[in-house]
Each structure stands twice: as structure tokens, then as C-alpha cells.
Image (cartoon, rainbow, N blue to C red; front, side, top):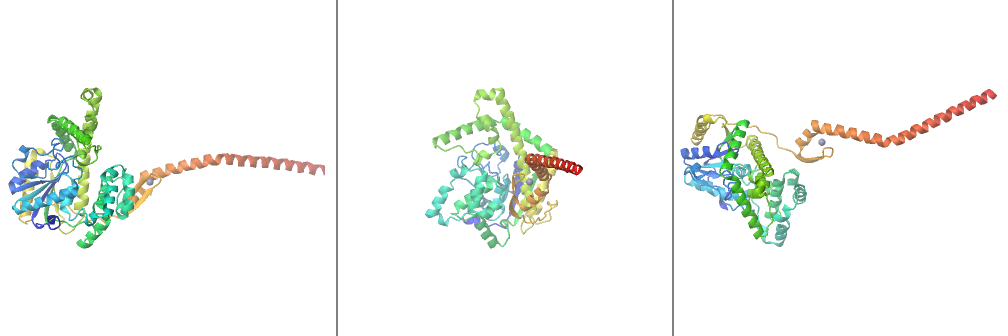
Length: 466
Ligand SMILES: [Zn+2]
């Protein structure tokens, strides 16, 4: 895999188009590809799979408009072994071949960690499988097989990771199942090398203190955004059009085929990996399990309406997640070759030509000629390196893996409220426990007092007698 480590075109221009569902990535990328002799490379982790064209919102033949599109529909959805490393190994040679034709690569997505695997060197690092032939490795591979791992909860996976790679486990929250799983898989694939060790070596080699360096020295990133209400409108319209185009039929057919294949190969269902993470599939799964008649019933309609709401919610959440990633990974690190990010607001569709197409064209034009870009890139602001430290708040029953989060938590209203109510409860319990003995003490005191009084009066009587 020479092209992964020795990418030849590091100083050639690369364009990345990033944005949430329904902001117009396909439309813009096709428009720009026609202007600049471009070819489109998919960076959406669901669109790589064959089938489910409607659910994964793949560009149609008409939308592609004769522009070359790469890495769409090329992985069998039943292949569960396809990883981001495979994607990167597939994508980089394509970027190279596009550049060798003197065309401009447009990487369009989609999926943050797919883009990340292209943007950064060795990120994630390739597992070294030198020891793959020895016995130790094969037992490791079977102990940590996908099947075994799938039986563990996120917390159990975290505990497992702590045993094989403590430094990485400290950096992960027990809820970060996917990341934890990836670190365990790395350990397995590399024949027992912890991810933290591999990263340390990589950092030492690259001379950078953390993470990988940027692979492309000339990269421009266009970020398509849209205001919240309008994005919700578009998502609603998109869901409607998906349903009109036969989303349910497509999902049903796929669901049946998948279950059939599982039965034949005696595999268990696994809806947590691969294409089943596609927005659309998991939300409609309950509905797909209903029979034809059940779907038509009142209950069926309720399940359906619920699925649509969940679909809209996931789409909105993903958009938020993407923004967070972009800010954290690209705007909060100022380093050599970190790409400039240009925001294009797509909210007002009536000014799409002016605000999106023409603006993007002007940016790329100047970028390709190495001229001053007529629009401001988003400001970059370096933030402090995070300090990882595992802390557990026993009062709130929560785990924190960042020191800053822990400190924030201790200062938070929520935590203080919990502490107060716990304190009150403890006080009440103590009081309850203490009450019987307190009453007892009071009793004794009272009796003692009475006795003393009696004695006093006795003495008085004696006095009198004397
Ligand atoms: Zn707390």
C-alpha cells in the first residue's frame, strides 16, 4: 500500500465539501466539478454501500450530470469488515489518479471520520501485522473476535480496553463505544500493539506532539451551513420525497434479504454496524418488523409517525455533531497546512446562485491561482491540549475522562443540587437512626433528674428532722 504512506501529490490542490444532510452538497459539487474539471469522491460512510439508494440519499444519475463519481455503492452491505482504514486505502489512490489526470478532486461528505482519515496522516495509524502468523496472534484474534466483542456492553468494552491499553482507555468515556471498539480492533489487528503505543511512535516520527499531521498541503474546505428552521424544513421535505420515491419498499426489501442471508449463513443479526447505522434504517426498524396488516392498523401508523420523528431528530443531531467536529478538529488547531474553512450559508435558496455557487467559484478560483481569496475564512483559535484524567462522581454516578469536564462538573448547579439533596437525605437518615438513642438518653436524663429531685427533697426532710 505505497500510496497510503507515500502520497505523491501532497502539494496539489484538493477541495473538500462538507455539510449536513439536505444542505445541497451534491448540487454544489456537481456545479463546481463542471466549472473546474472536477471529479467527485464520496466521503459518506453509508453511501459506499450497494443498495439503499433512497435511504442513504445517493445522488441520482440525473443529479450526477455526467460528472465522474467515485466510491459510491461499491461495498456489499453484508460485508461487516469494511472499516475506515479500508476506505482511506481505497480513496487515496483515487485522489492520486484524479490528480494525475490533471483534474480537481472534490471530496464530498458526509462522515467526519472518513474525511479525517484522508486529511490527516496515519490517522488512524495502520495496524502492523508483522506478527500475524504466530500463535499468540491467532488466539488474540479469536478472543477479541467481532462476535465476542459484540456480546459486551460499552462499559465492559471499556474495562477490556483498560486491560490491554490503559492510556487509551483513560482518554475514552465508557459511553464512547465506537471509539473504544476501534481501539480494541486496532490492538487485535496489530497483533497486540496498543493504539497508544502506535500513536506515540507516530508522533515521535512526525515531530508533532499530538495526532497526525495534515496530508495535503493545499486544501480548501467549503462548509455548507443552513439555519435551524430552514434545515428542519428541508429535512421534512426530504423525508417526504424519500417516502414518495419508495423508502419503505426499499428498506423492507433490504431487511428481508438481510435476514434471509443471516439465516442461510447462520449469522446473528447485528444492526449496530455497517449500513445499519444509516440514518433511516434504524429509525424504521420497528416498523419493518410489523406485518403488512399491522402496518395498516392504528398502531402501525403510530409506529410509522414515530419513526419519521426519530429520523428528523437523528438528522438534526448529526448536523450538530458535524459542526462540533469541524470546529474542534480544524478551527481549534493552528498548524502548518491546516486547511482554511469557508462557510457558505445555504439558508436562502432564492439566492443560491449568488451566495453559494458564485461565492464557491470565486473562492476556488483564487485558491487555484494562489491569489488572495475574496472572502474571509472562519477564524482559527488554538485551544489548550485537553488533559485526560478519569474521575467518578459517586454522588451523581457519572464518569468523566477530561479534567476540565470534571472541574466544570464539580462547579455545576446539577452536581451541587445532588450534593445538597444527598446531604439532606444523609442528615435525615442520621437523625432517624439517632432518634431512638436520643429518646433513650432523654429518658435517662429525665429519670436522673427526678431521682435527684427526690433525693433533694429527702435531704430537705432530714434537715427538717434535724
Ligand atoms: Zn456530581
